[in-house]
Picture 1 (cartoon, rainbow, N blue to C red):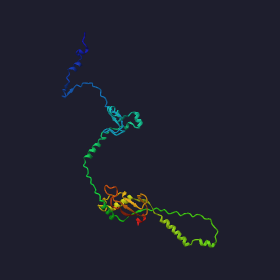
Picture 2 (spheres, one colour):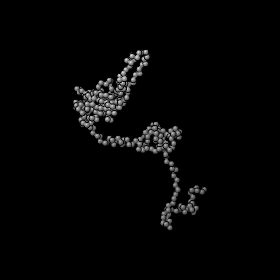
Picture 3 (tube, rainbow, N blue to C red):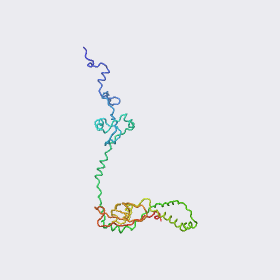
Picture 4 (tube, rainbow, N blue to C red):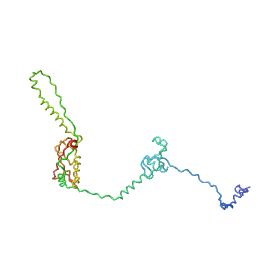
Length: 297
């Protein structure tokens, strides 16, 4: 019985030449060495895995902000983000619900959230500026400075309101027949009629005490601080609107709403006190509100 086909020696001349040819042969004309190419088979290469499209449901450092849409590894999404509800799969239905398209797929932000710790380290390493404590003026000295530096009258200008008093309408009286002598005696003289008319006009012109806006305790404190800025020690006096009290004004008013002159008391607050310094009387000054037309003159 003949042996298998593979065990037989080749009898074809072409096969014998191929077997006897060395792997490298020298070309006699050029002197170059040609290497016989042999076909080899290997495993088929898979296309690179592009990952799965996801949408972040919260901020994730080194990946992106919430609502960012990009591709990520399947294993990370399947094992980490999806079980912890950090991201969702972007299916075709989900794209349609959110009004997005494939063009809205972005890239992973690898630097997101990495600068905040670095900034904290930079600010922590910076030397802090020394805190300079401003020494406040003693209450006794502050009271003396307010009394000497502030003028006796602080003037403010406001636009007045024109509010004339309406003239009352006389009640009609039934006419009674009278004699000519009584009628002439009861009728007012032309001079008296003119005087009464002038008096009515003057009374209407004087009734312009209201003003547009007001002069508040804050306005007075700001005006006082402008005056005190010229002195180094006086500029350190702590003054707030609570330190101003209007004298003779009904109720707990904190502003003036009419033309005229008023007195105010400026209380001195000492550090650690409840708002008043023991043994010190408030400084009294006058507030005058004039029409704004006088300021232009």
